[in-house]
Image 1 (cartoon, helix red, strand yellow):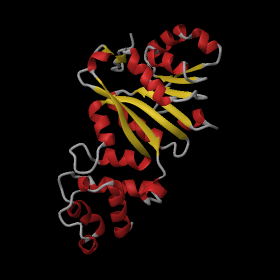
Image 2 (tube, one colour):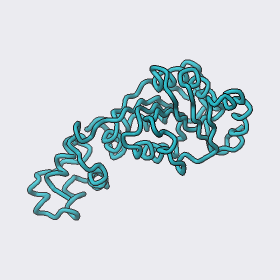
Image 3 (tube, rainbow, N blue to C red):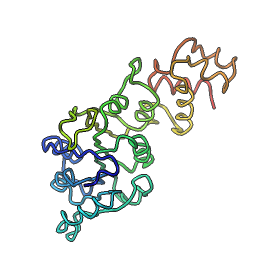
Length: 257
């Protein structure tokens, strides 16, 4: 059931409960669940939230969930949306409160989903996602490590990421070919914490910095800013992977738009 979209369903109750507890440390008014699958996490979330809004793209699973949670749907505690999370307007679902989000994210669309969450701006409170272990490492990576790159910067501009636990492939049915991890994301105030006034402009700059990861900042940026500005910034042989978000933001201010 429901394997057309490459799902692997988390079956270990202890991890499901941990995700729900991290998403709702106290009872939440509502939680948006992305990709409920067969509803295992949905059950744990319903124990901690007054309402769950579940977004599922697979019509076979939607029908299954409608039968499984008939009582909760009729009581208004579960709203089941048959939709593609990449096409739905998340902002409309969260108003007027700030969103709490949770889910087992499909590996192949993790980054686009994160971008849509970050696009909520100040309208989200926290997100707890089960993702591929390699992706979780990239989200939380620090400069100077092999996992640190543009996805790390994109995430850390918007949020404080923290890996809560590792999840072995044996916790899924059917088991995937890779291990996973649970990551907690909490929004940060970029202007106050990083001195970044325009996130979009900074992220365009950061994308240029990491365009060719093995090249130096000088080589990646010289076509955009010119030799004189780059030499004055004294980036020398530094690579983007050596600078944290605050240092990249300072370089962006020095070079200007």
